[in-house]
Image 1: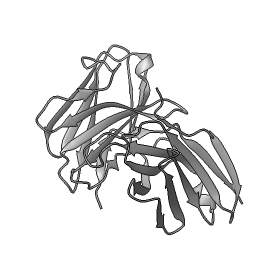
Image 2 (image 1 turned 60 degrees about the horizontal axis):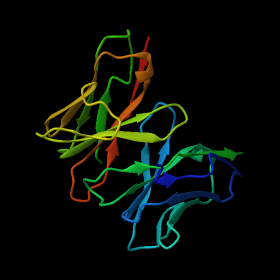
Image 3 (image 1 turned 30 degrees about the vertical axis):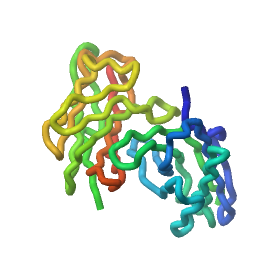
Length: 113
Length: 115
């Protein structure tokens, strides 16, 4: 039962353009969402998060949008840079802090120079 | 910022032996630590949640007698893979949180190969 899904396993974007990564969830108890960047054989690196009381959170080149009614969130990266090439995971939690994270399936982003 | 150290970063062991992986929070006290496993090209799957001083809570399908978790202090949790078999070969990652909405920090992971 995959409660958090990333339907695009891979995405290629031209350098300088916008990268949009999508994530859908099914568990209505989730109220906190996070995006992580991961390289092979390394642990995930936190990028940005959003709680269910907001619909948008921005940090530099990264913006996360949350549509609670659609149970959908997206990560926008603009402008995209070659160093952004990695696997991106969205994750969700029912109670941020001590609660466990449920990860999505990941999207491999490749930025084309 | 919060740092979690995971050791070893990679290990090769013979089938039937046991392997211990350590996860340390270096600059904060971790009330809760999580252990994940990632198979190639797949998502991170939570194996268990451990709270300091109490028994770990295992996810469905994870054998608690095979994957022994000890969280004896607020800065150290260990995962022991007992009687390892080739199908246990995977990438194991820990994460820790001090609680109180302070966020999660991940270790750098351990690549386990059982031959």
